[in-house]
Length: 145
Image (cartoon, rainbow, N blue to C red; front, side, top):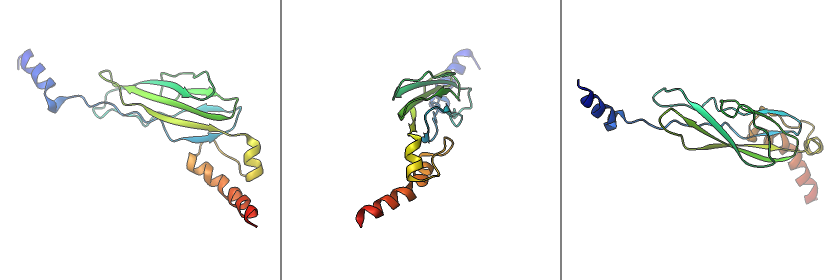
């Protein structure tokens, strides 16, 4: 096969590069003063190419994101609030669509007053809400009486 034929074959739709897919992970709850590790390890490239990672904070109190060019960047949080991070991966040919993750940082006193169980940094947003749900339902029931 000539070099020209090879280039034509590689440029054909059957060999078109599909974009990689960024997976920033599930949103979760955390407390102030915790070290947070984001997880983009579920990101992938349909053709199996190695990925480069680019994390960026897009919302919330500013933090110093360490290792923002890896699948698992880290940062320390000091303030309550919602922190949003965007992940874009690249397969050496093109960028993925962005994916985001929210880290919802709650005052530890809120969890203790509502339900002694509190929150965990390793759970998902749904898990954290389930931990708080019994206390919220109890409070709602008291108000109706």
